Length: 496
Image (cartoon, rainbow, N blue to C red; front, side, top):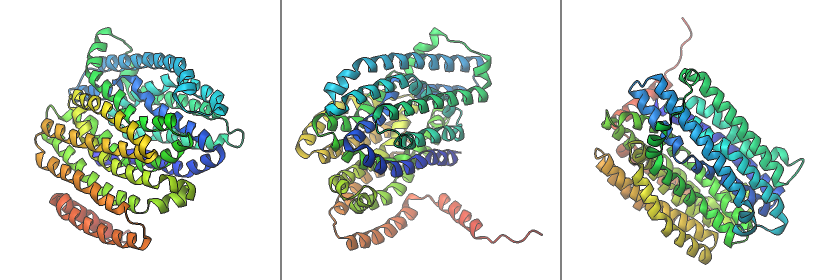
């Protein structure tokens, strides 16, 4: 079940990634670097808007999953679900009003937007404010589906929206290159997606149709559980998206495009670890109290799969970053973005290793640990980001992002080892990996000759594959893979 749900989540993220690869160069060409930079800020803002759910989306998944495991009565499930969704709608409306109120300051003072783009940027951010209630409550409805482990439905709903995020602006280009019509179309897509999530949930879960009740006493437990999770949901997106806003504030706006282009490319590689932990979250929540060994096994398996899948891909990215960017977006962007891509690749590996411990801590009832960690990281990250951005430009921003990701990964693993003491050996191996892999990637970044890069890759990957097969894949898993391969090789005879 976990493998199937993971694959569904991967598909739901790979398809839009391919759309981004196609759409981004076209958008840069037609919109120009500055206008495309504002569009990327709009994309970032839409992602960051999820903080306004105040942790209730993930809290709803945890609470519903735990109650389903204990055979909770339908009336209680309905009360929890509708109370959480109603509260999220209210928070979305309030957040939209706040965003609309601060939009003039954001555009005219907070960001380094050229005067020629000020008017349409204001209109675009007002439209983003209107979309906020849809964004927040959609997250809650998705959390409800995930609590029931309905990842097929989640994927079917996610793919059209993610595709529309990139393809939608392309559909506007024949008529306009203005930001307002582009963001207006994105708003329509968000509204349609919200309706689709609501219809699916109502059809699938009878308790939502038969019991509609909002109870004040349910709000307290939800907010208490999601309180610390809220802190992480506020601080973590700040650290995830603050880099490009720093660039927009202190560097020419075109630098946002030179940074976001490699960022969008390499961070999409996080789809596998993110897909795994999203699929595992309800399983962690349901199993931890009754069977912590299963939680530990899922945690340990996630760490192994992340290492096996991420290192070969990121090594390839670092080695051939300049060549890949040149083919994708041209020589000019490649010159500005190659080092950014290489630094971000290191950070992506660190972030991938932090995914499993982060979700283990939250799903097993200790979101306070992740929140406190992020609160401690934020001021240090702000100082590093400001200093490195002024000293090294967008490369310095990438350096700050990656170093912060490394510190976060180490701390998350240490905390998870204390929370899940059944896997101390695997956590120690993960910590060693975090120290060794960045050094290997740094050496790869120093290579300039294409022939040498090819030789290194053809030597390192088979050696890593051998070590992974013998040390990272368990004996029972090797036997299962051999049996699967034997079945695949078996000829299919004619029907008798």
